Length: 107
Length: 165
Length: 89
Image (tube, rainbow over the protein chains, first blue to last red):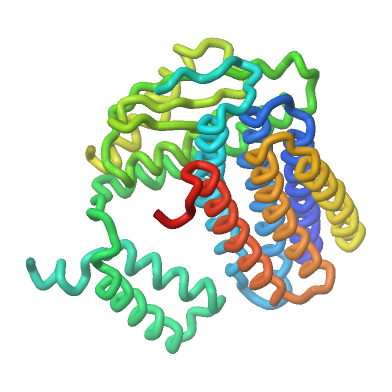
């Protein structure tokens, strides 16, 4: 019974996570310029992978006893994603990439 | 230099290292606890010169509540971004927004920039040399003044209070 | 039931990987390619975790952690190179 509940929760988290990762990638492929494209991967993909890792924690904890090390990967992704996004945005501004909302004035 | 600042220069870092070690080994066995504590104590001492000025965490309780709020915002933000990404192309109305900064200090700024990048349709894009303005790119901004105000009250104010800067 | 869900999730992630690869080839700017590569890394970590669930072995986690670390470091290096024309100042 307990295992069924855990399986159901794992399944929901997996679908949600894969869905968000897919949405992030669709955003990356579909949006018009580099600055809008940044939004998809930094948010959606990070949360998507976070959900999948949570599912993995649930799955293995229910079978092999408490397992938390996947948490490390999520934590790292959540810390690194904004830093990558910020640096890529700065590089894009530096290279004067086309932006559909006009060039940003120098801050 | 007191004894404490010599041998335990970054207590939070030591705790974080212990947690990291236990998670990496996926066990809280006594042996790992001892080894993790040892590493947590030794690594900050030997890498002291590498670390910038430690930022004191003044309000740990508020920091915890703020972290929960940010996690909630991240989840909500993702549904909003998903709707924009999958919706019609006209829904995308990006804009650059300038946000004046009150927060100072490396750590607090990093925290603010990270939180902005992870939440509702905004990515922090650039910060000027004097750290007075932050350039934020918004995915679908209705009104840039409101957005800047929102960022200031919702994220900057708590961070300012947490690190007392 | 769970096995089917894992396969569905793997399929969705494969589509995501293909979309990333498309952006990687398409460009148009170097920054787009870096972003595509970064996303590719994150999604690859997710695929490996999913594969771990599929086979029921928890040691795939280390591969996922390594990929996440490498992805971050390479993104950092590439973006820094574009910004400064130099990686280590």
